Amino acid sequence: MRNQLKHYINGEWIESTGSETIEVINPATEEVLGKISSGTEEDLDKAVKAARDAFPSFSRSTKEERIQWLKKIAEGYEARKEELIETMTDELGAPLSVSEEVHYHMGLGHFKQAVESLEDFSFSEDRGGHTLIKESVGVSGLITPWNFPTNQTSTKIASAIAAGSPVILKPASKTPYAAMILAEIIDEAGLPKGAFNLVNGTGSVIGNGISSHPDIDFVSFTGSGSVGEKIMKNAAETIKKVALELGGKSPVIVLDDADVEEAAKTALSNIMTNTGQVCSAGTRVFIPQSMKDSFEKKIVDLLPTFLVGDPRKEGIATGPLVSKDQWDTVQSYIEKGEKEATLLAGGTGKPEGLETGYYAKPTIFTDVSNDSVIAQEEIFGPVTTIITYENLEEAIDMANDTVYGLAGYVVGKDPETVRYVASSIKAGRIKINDAKTDFNGPFGGYKQSGIGREWGDFGIEEFLEIKSVHGMPSS
Ligand code: NAD
Image (tube, rainbow, N blue to C red; front, side):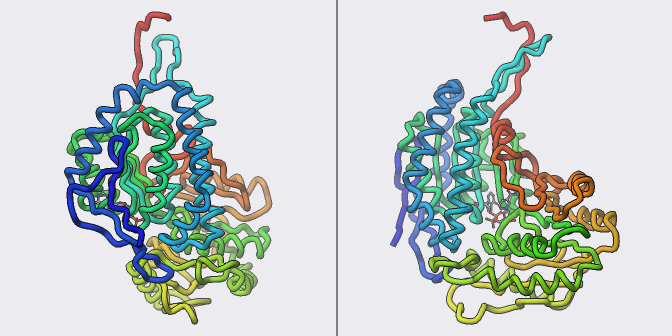
């Protein structure tokens, strides 16, 4: 049993001031993995005080010091590779290969990128009439979701360290253990006491406490839109800066010159990777009407190549959903879809032979109308929708007809058309065909997908304030 009941505050692991605990469940077995403390307001106050005390010196640390801390964290992270991978498979249900190739890799990528970005980063610039100075935004509260346990935490922590901003991290209580390993790694990297703190607990106590705390200057939140809205309202009372990374319902626009197999693979990998629990997943697939039959046949043929099952087994591409609640939500959307559209594959219930664990059937709907519930609301599971279009302008209009704007995907060949579509989708990140991820590429959303950007130099900017100094004496 993995009972890890301490919080990391002011450079040490300390007991919670409360006695309540939260169970962490392995979604593949439905068994209790262990417990964490449900932190109290007093715990949070201690962490905020530690961060405030750290602020004067941490915010004045040099670029070289920050680079050394980040490099040590990246080394420590690499040294604990196996443990991180195993932990994310246990707490999230991600197949071992996904824990390694996606989760482990992304967490590491952000620390390495922060080093690279810092090397070229200028905190002071002579702009003729004034000197522009960028300095720490202050004490920062980080609130993260469960779906990418190291990616979401690492991008925020790496940017905060690069900016010299002390933090209090509240990881998602469904997946706290990878974040706690990260805290151990940071502990060994020699950061000043109080520069990094971790308090476990519920959203209603610790999350809410962070967004309303008078001594926290900035909240960086990743999670659902409904919680993002609460955070903004809370933060308004103390005029706190907020960055919100929220949900999405991203389009995949398949052009008429696209290879059908490539298009079907793109559509499937969007819902099968991380069991579709990806904020930027492309879950509305727009295909030319003329491609409907061939695309439907190809996507159904390819579906079994993404094996669903025990995340610890070799060859498995897709594990269970994270929790019973998430499974119930996905089921209710599949039920709605069965009334709104044509079920091409999957459906309600669990896949055969996978009765234990929160496994869902990968589900494909076709003849979907873009204004239906399954095409407008974020499902966060292995469910996709196929929508046909007659001409490109219609596809673009439908792609943008959503409250979200996190990501977009374009599959096709003609360079001019590809560029035109990429520039027409109203979203913060566009991926063309099988382009690789660049860790310096900003990540964040338009519209209700959020406010602000993470990753690379733009991520560092979020943790900084801007000052213009007029009449600065030359040094
Ligand atoms: P969630 O909003 O329920 O929880 C996210 C975090 O907020 C958790 O740590 C939770 O404990 C905390 N929280 C809950 N109530 C709170 C409150 N009242 N005040 C402050 N904090 C509170 O989201 P989730 O279910 O963990 O994650 C899924 C959602 O996250 C999806 O909507 C997904 O699209 C979104 N997401 C977005 C991105 C992105 O970068 N845009 C990335 C991953 C996930």
